[in-house]
Length: 171
Image (cartoon, rainbow, N blue to C red; front, top):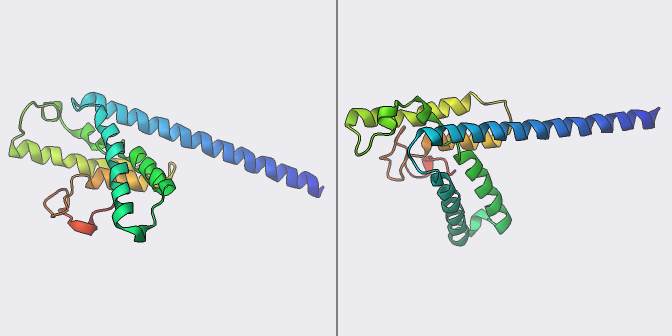
């Protein structure tokens, strides 16, 4: 009886692990689809997100070189770069709320149009926030911070909150 109970428990744990992995993969497919929709709607190059991956890796390598106190190894750099790259695919998800005439306007935006465009960060953060509880919480935390704060600047002149320096989430 004890062996049967143990085998049953082991089978249940294995089934739960498999279902969890299936759900994680399904969530990734959904996130990829959302990202593709946004990229399709915008005239920006689809290579933009690929450049993010390269820049992330270069920045992490520089941090590892100049700030050994972070103990970044090749393995952790690879893991962080992958996690940030995955989450960064949703960085412009808030652009779904921007009217096409502003989103795809050739040339410079007016001050009023730019104010509308800036809302894509907070809308993106709200959309990602609504996904909480649907999967990998670390991934969603990164995706939220990236969607919300990817236009903040070290000198504090960015948006949406005008964060400066180390107040800006690292991812």
